[in-house]
Length: 321
Image 1 (cartoon, rainbow, N blue to C red):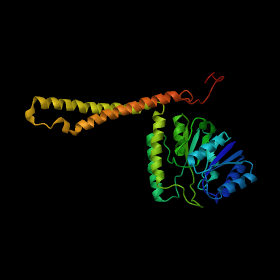
Image 2: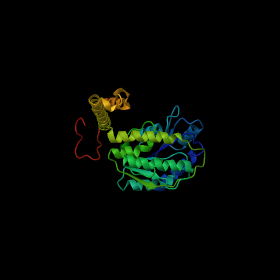
Image 3: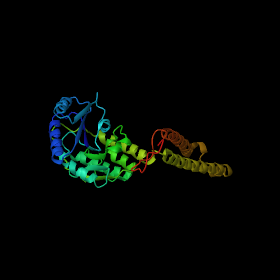
Image 4: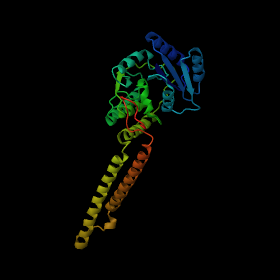
């Protein structure tokens, strides 16, 4: 069974066409489809259209949010609802072409557990394409997951991934990164990016700022989620070292001023280096303290969450695993 998860936000004009195109692909390839619409608090007739589709097609299921919670929440709800062994995500605006689903599944059959779309040729204005390319380059460099288009909504996953990866905030674009951090194989393929036929884009300039902040969060989670003291402690030790060197310099400066008063050195309390050195020592203490607290939280959470991912097993399940 193939589950298709579709987040919806004010896309009433495109839903019937999208459903028809998905059906055509499913029929042509003999797929056992499970179609899940997530209405993320739409203010138009999107939910009415979805209800109509569900009446005509028993494979259509849907969830309606009380208000707009964001794409990550919609996808998270859809992943929890999905029944298929593989999960395909599509945007509801018809810019993703369902006819490319077989190519994604073929790529998955090569041994990959995540396949992400790459909109190599985009039908978007330059002020969206430029920042997007910079953002994708930054994500690839910082996370080590080299994809050309982390933002593409057309992706395919093995269902088991979502037993270990949970979305919140706006981390939906980073599922391949989070999955790769758990050891899953990630790839990509070029997709056709169709021009928008109805409505308007739901993303503005603030998306760039939010995306960068989310990138820092993902980098910390994937790189130091199990060992926060490694980065916070390092920053604390560096701060301590700089502050200590500053205080050592000031001590030698004070001794010199006492031994040779004729040099006319500036009084120690008038030196800005005193404030900087003390500030660095205090900052180092704060980093170390936060690092220790982070380690305590991580150790506590390990009681209920595995810090590893199992791919295969031989024999029975280990007791209390």
